[in-house]
Length: 150
Image (tube, rainbow, N blue to C red; front, side, top):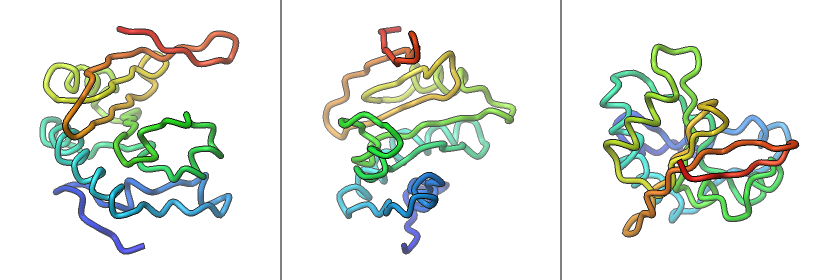
C-alpha cells in the first residue's frame, strides 16, 4: 500500500496498521472515499490534538475494513470502517488519556467522544457536515459493554 499523507503528522500506514489483520491475513485496504474521510478526521481532530500537546499521538485503532472489524468483534456500524474514527491511547507518555478526552470535549468538533473503560483509551469520530457531539462512557457489566451519556 502506498503511503499517503493525511495531515502534517499522520500517514495512512498509521491509520491502517493492524496486528490482528496481519496475523489473520485480512486486508485492511481503504477505498478512496475512506481515505478522504481519514484526511478530514486528521485535519479536524488528529492534527489539532497533535499541535496542542506538541507530542506524537498514539493511535491504537484507526481504519478497519468491514472484514477486520467483524473479526475483532467491532460494532457493525463502527465509524472505524468508514475512516471516520480513531482510538487514542497515550499510556506510557506524559499525556493522559483523560487530558486528550478533555481537550477534545472542550475544543474540537466531533461526532462521538467516548471515555472507554475509565480512560483506558479515548474513541473520537468526526462526520463532515453533521456531528452529534455525543459524549459517552463505556463500561462493562458481566463482560458485556454498555454506553451511557457523560
